[in-house]
Image (cartoon, rainbow, N blue to C red):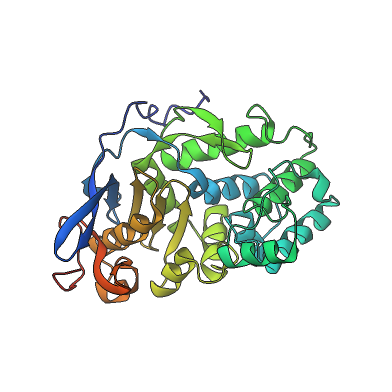
Length: 340
C-alpha cells in the first residue's frame, strides 16, 4: 500500500461488492436479463445525489484511471497539450492517427517503439482490427490501445533522469508519482496494486473516489495539469478513443463533458461545474455501460433529450427491434415504448 498525506482518507474496503440491478434486457415487455453493477452521482458540491449498489468498495477502474495518470505525468514535467496529451490519456482504436501520434511522442523523447513495454496487440477498434487482419499485419506495441500512455510515460521518465527499462515497476519513481496523484485526486488511499492488461500498474480505489477525481479535473483552475488533461480530451475526443466510439460521441453530445471508459464495464464522466457520475457493470458488459452512464448523467441534471442516442441498444427478433437494454426504473429517464 502506498503512503499518503494525513489529509487523505483511508483506503476503501476490499470486499465482494454488493452490486445491485442497474440495467434490464427488456424483450417484448418482459425482463429477459439483468445486469448488476454500481452507480454514483455527485452534485456540484461533491455530495452524493444518488447511488446504487456498492460505491465504496475497492475496485479497479482500469483505463478510466488514464486521465489521472496523465495529470501525474504533467506534474512531473511532461510537455504535452492538445491532441498528443489526449492520446497520452487514451484507450485508442489503433487508427493511423493514433499510431502516428504515438510515434511523434516517442520521436520527441528521442526513443523508439522498441522502448515501449506494453504488450503487442491488434488494434482495439473492430473496423481497424478487421482491416489489419485482411492486410496480414501483425500485433504491435504501437497498435495496442495504451501505446500513447506508454510513450508519454517513457518521455516523462527520461525528462526526469529516471530509468527507462523498468518504468512499469510499481516502485519506479514515475509510478509512485502516479499513485500519489491518484490518492490526492480520489481523496483516498490505494487499496491494492496489480498489473493492468497493458502491463502498467493498476491501482484500486472506490467508485465514489473515481467520480470525485473526475470532478476535480473538470473544476481545476485553467492551465493546471487537471484542466489541461480535461481540455485536451474534450477538444480531441477521438484521439482519446476513436471514430464512432461511444465515449467520444457522448462528449460531443454534452457540452463540456469529460468522459472516459475502462474495460470491465467502467465509465466515469464529469461536467464543468463538478457534477460527476461513475459506473461499474459487474459482468463487464459494454451494452449496459453507456445506457446506465447516460441515465446517471440525466439524474445529474443533463437534459435527457441530449442523451437519447445513448439510451440502450435494441434487442432484435427476426431482425426487427423487439426490446432494448434499459437502465432500471430507479435510473431510467428515457421515454421509450413499453415493449422496449
